[in-house]
Length: 397
Image 1 (cartoon, rainbow, N blue to C red):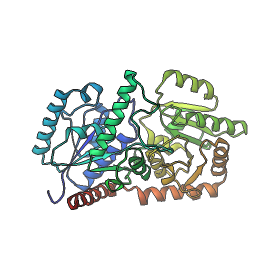
Image 2: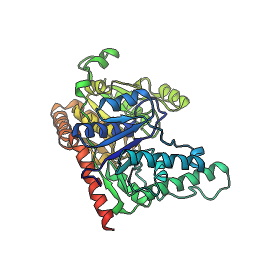
Image 3: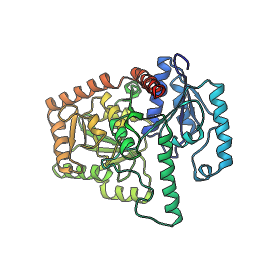
Image 4: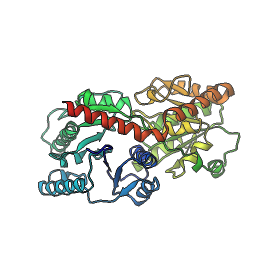
């Protein structure tokens, strides 16, 4: 193997309207590898605007004929044989030592069987309630859809089990790999992410001007899809509680809806208390104009939005769940609360926004944590060190 292993990174396409956490993390990896001058090729075949963001990092980014993930391709032996050969040739031609598959790309592992390449799957799943993945989640069934879902769960677990290393950006991912997918702890690793600074991209004041929010009004921001799992209902309830207490804070929720009917119902219930600002390409500006970041998501791995908000010195209020508890230290850079306790969340928001001393302490702690723990320059070297350690351990087995 080369003195410095040459790495192939593959990020699968997404059909979502904007860029999500896994893609943001992949772009941060590309940025860190480019800045560090470490050898890596990044493949992304999806939307042009996201491809352009990869290119802007300065990394070696390409489009290439890689297998796609779908029922038809998973079950088509001719397709699988063709792309196994294509990948083998690509890996040989580019002298690849390591293949790192970002979230949603684990299916590619089965195309790499028999190749002399170190396989890394990045596992994105986590939950407060980790249970082993089962063939049939709700009892045996002969219904076609349930049979296909059962097969797919087995297929996902098989791909993780075939990897040489299953990594995650947080300890919650590692625990999910072990408990849900049955991966031996010795084949798992945690690589805390670096975050590309965004403050230079922010146009402070633009969001306030757009929505007629005065400079002295306090903004509580949340970023995520308009879904139950992202806590949009709790966000609305907290806003309602504080409004009825006479508080004039502005609650802004940035993100797109997944289900039109659900989004319409949420807007009907909470538009009196929450301004839904839709999908935004200017999230740094949103962070710059906000005063506090509220993250009521029901489950997380390691939420990048919390990390990004820290650069802007925003105290964070979140539920005490895996992932959030790795980023927020209670009473320091924010508050962790019992899941779903909207009354306590309202009290904590008041505490930060109505007491300058408390706010400044949390704000400074947030900036300090961002600078000390999420330096983008350290991300690629951390990944490389994990790869080399895992490769050495595999050689000893």
